[in-house]
Image (cartoon, rainbow, N blue to C red):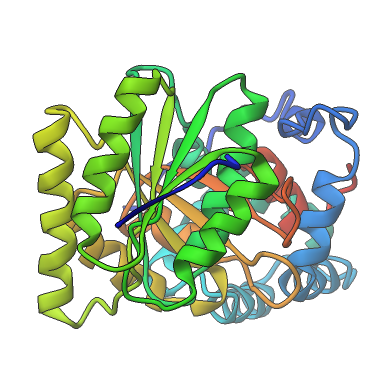
Length: 338
């Protein structure tokens, strides 16, 4: 029985320092009822305070740039989930930059690190383009507890602010409360939810895509069940979902978004690798950057698996999912003011 919810190796740092901090003036896209640049970096900075406080303390030490300072910075970066490989690359670039610009004070290292971090992260900042097809089908995936269903609700709100109509597909047929949770988000956003009381996830999403075609909906957000990357049979099932979507719409899904919990640290890298091998992940959503996450995993991803980070989340509100802007993230992580 169908249910229709009508609520609806090292990389070189640029040697040119002129205009080096102009990126700090760039602000992320805001919700329509907010002034551009107001609040977002401050909230992100608060969420990344665990790492930002350590870095701020190190750079404010008043000392000279020496091997001891680099060692302390290395420790902070590794414990902030940047990982060994990305940390080594960043430090190599940082040392090069310091030599080229003849820096000597610890306080100057903060600005140099901001510059090198931006070079690493900026290639990941590729906004989602959801108007290339109609309907534009986005398949959501991730492990249990990453915040996938919640991210769908927030993403639906964001897409609506971009003038796009949205339909939700309750394809998580394993978790008991998943359908009800998605319907609640449908009510909050006033969008249709295609669901089934029980049955096959691929069938639910198949029906949702057909419904979107008939209704001329712009975007379909297809939820899928969370699964462990080590469970081969579950990964095979999600591959089936993708194949079925392609049967009803040959070029779909147009985007495969992997939702990652920022608190999982380096384990996020194994998730990216496993889901990418299974589905061909086209973008990432990094959630829960709201107080306990260390934040450095984005740098680790940029180094090991440079898949675009489409969105980051800093809270539970409808407007707490925003496009990833590398300049904002670096400014927040290193404690720069808005």
